[in-house]
Length: 335
Ligand code: CUA
Image (cartoon, rainbow, N blue to C red; front, side):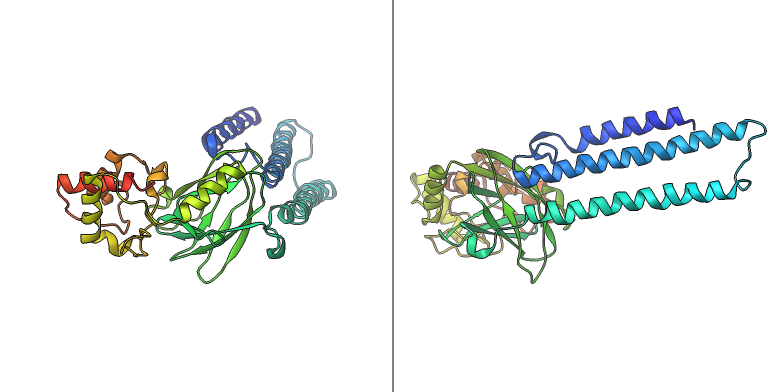
């Protein structure tokens, strides 16, 4: 393949990679915090360095090809000193220098900047636990528990303590900071900081089983006052069902297996297998962002959870149509 065609191929694959993997509200290349910006800058530098090295290698390949075709020019093996020099410079010298520079920048500039604040200087801690396949979110200071949708105050350095209930997961909000692995028996920490109010999508970044790709989350960065109101509201027990249908739904929920797997504070339901549903009606999505949180989607999910997320731990309970409607109305009303 000619150098020109190689170059073209390189350009096409580069554009494809950027277009496919780095767009939308989950983009490392659209940073919304200082640490994420440092990571994005490092990425661009790495891309540039890799581009220069690659172009150099392709250029030398092309040069050797051209020289090889000219008669009278010595080929490999006939100018040993020159050849050795080329290998040492381009095979060891330049790659070595690039790797050392990247190591120094990554370890001494980017890493310290992305670390969680020291415990003594932490204005706020959120405990996030990965589970197959959702995120449990606890606010030790406020007593609130939720799932899959994390709220934080904007402009506040939040200390995320990351743990797991089963296998290794990885907590990652690309626009806000680097990944942090959730390893059994460990309490890893990472800084979560958003400069501007908004919604930031995250994704489990460690293969954790069949539904790994359906293990996403949102971080909502709220103005401090709205955040405080949200936290106080989330800490309360559930609000009583407001309609006859919702009251029936609560009864169905308590009479079936739902209550042994989920917690709804203020009711006898205290299961710890699935997400806390005390205020599930306030979330925008269910099943770790798999479905929008509407009454019809709730009913569809409860009717056959295995259809949407095969392998997840929630079974179909065989509820009839009216029971499904009632439970969905009840959960929708848990705001
Ligand atoms: Cu959890 Cu991948």
